[in-house]
Amino acid sequence: MGLKFRSILERVFNTYGEDKRFDVLEIHGRYENPFKEYRPQTLYEFFVMRLIELSEFGARGGVPKEKSQRVDDLHWVQPSVEYMKKLRDICLEHGMVAYTWLGQSCGLFQSGGKVFLMDPLFEDSIVNETFGPKRVVPCPLKIDQVVNEIKPDYILVSHDHPDHLGDDSAMKLSTIQGQCKWIVPNGIGEFLSKHGVEPSSIIEMKWWERVHIDDEFEIVCLPAMHWSGRMLLDANKTLWCSFMILRNGKSLFYHGGDTGYASGVFNKIGELYGPIKFAALPIGQYCPEWHQKPRHISPAESVKIMKEMKIHKMVGVHWGTFVLSSENYLEPGKLLLQEATKNERTNNIIVPSQGRTIMMKEDKIDFGADDEVEKEDKFSVVYK
Image (tube, rainbow, N blue to C red; front, side, top):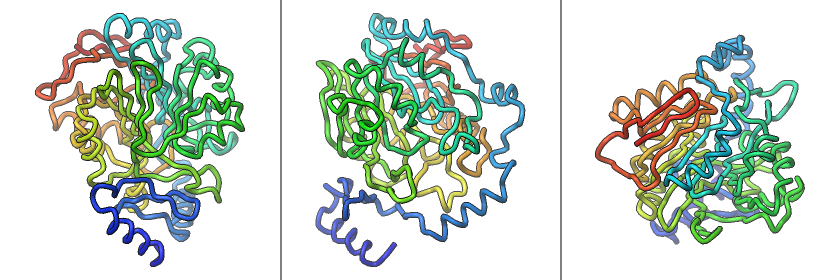
């Protein structure tokens, strides 16, 4: 980090102090992280990482060649589209919320008759169709099924990295405009407009902004320690964030998107919006730590965030989908299970299966005990 940039950051901290230290920071048309733990990637680091990737070629992530083994290892599920369609009414009639993980940070959250799609990515590969990275297992749902059958009411995008927002996904989802609103951090509206989304369907937000999307639901745009960009030269031209979904003023769901661990900010979110019913927190892409730590959290850090934010139940996402770092592709899930066991919360700290739906009572928050399973099968698990 250059001395000039560091001095700007120091002036910001000295001027704003504790109250505004987590505000959006924009310098010369690019967004920057206002967190002391953040360190931008250097050019030297970039090339070292490419050499490491080349040295690991073919063995990176320890992914088996046989698709059937990968499907078994990850407990992958092909969900019933008819069941997914019924969830909208089931949640509304029985006071439930439902979450279905679709790989990486993409997922469907359902509550009160509304369907929220997070970080839409249905492509089989990112960056390059020929060379990948390619999905470890298929996306449990096809984009056409989501567009034509499930029809989300709201789409939330945490940032514009290709593993969180697909080109083809955006174009096909744009066909349900009029019924569907996109809620995104500042700057992503231009990308969406180029992919066919009507500007009137786009809501751009900055950190700490709060918007009513209907009579019951609100969205809060919240900080994350990460970065943005889809090409080599557009780094940090758009903002990145996490999101909170509130219903009738209560914090219902937190979408972590992608973040490193920054001290203080998650406590602050917890003070303002805790307790929180449910969250999807990233747990993968943390290895090697010297490179990834400023941008991605480990399973242990996700549980730390869970506690700081006063989250009742969480699922660990952003793993087991693409090989984008050096840890074994199953390691994040195994480490999260260890954390759940250590904390005696194996039903509240969840290692999800792609395609399997998690359901729970919307109004129950009990930090004194682990939830109990009411019923489960291959396709879903319902908690009391």
